[in-house]
Amino acid sequence: MKRTIQGFLVAGTLVIGGSALAQQAGKAEGSKKGTAELRGFVVPTDEKAFLERLHYTNQLEIKLGQLAQQNSTNPDVRAFGESMVREHTDADQKLMSMAQSRGLKLSDTPKPLNDMEKKMIAADKAVMEELQALKGDAFDSCYIAGQVGDHDATLGKLMAGRQALTGNAQLTSMMDELSQHIVQHRQQAYSVLGKLGQAMTTGVGGAGNQGTSPAGSPNGNMGTTPGSGATDKGNTGPGRTGTGSPTGASGSTGTSTQPAR
Image 1 (tube, one colour):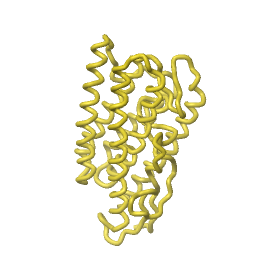
Image 2 (cartoon, rainbow, N blue to C red):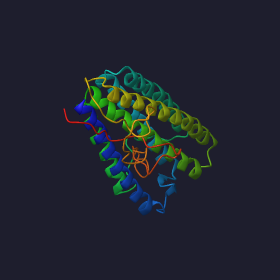
Image 3 (spheres, rainbow, N blue to C red):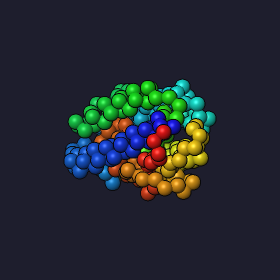
Image 4 (cartoon, rainbow, N blue to C red):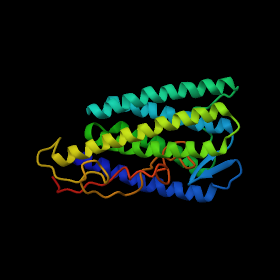
């Protein structure tokens, strides 16, 4: 259980740090030539570059979903990870097919727009390595808390791209369809996060544990929310941070406070 609490704390730290970096990036780079900004989310206006970032995000979610099936023993977390693998694989196949039809060859890792995006890509790698080392409850809390923010920021990037890239009806349709799925994924992740919080509060995984679930979880337990729901490196980075939830949803992660064991 102590590892689970540490997992929520790590996730909360990522929220605060990622959001701050994303806000700085949005302010500093929002008017840079070749980019478009919407509500702090910055995307390239070049179609190929934008598609590369969506491809990168899909591949990242697939890898994380596969990791969830390996490192988690929680049925809800494993089922969510399996769903992410299936749906992001389908989305990526459609994306790559469209790119091929337009003669675009996409890189697996996009060329950074700036130093901030370069740091974001490095942070994605660090998060992946961190999750690879975690098992069980600690993995569950970090992975699912991150997933809420991941999908918030992916939605933010799609909103920005929808506004900036208007000359391709096929791309617009794909972004609209993907946005609908991303909203559903975010809701699923938040639901699972709430269940993890309930398990901590009711003592599942350890006798007599007392703590608070993440703020905003369905069981209504008190918690502190260190940042908004977005942890998706989505402002200037292709990965997983954003300045906030584009949907206006409540925060995704919270720190747990309980007696030492």
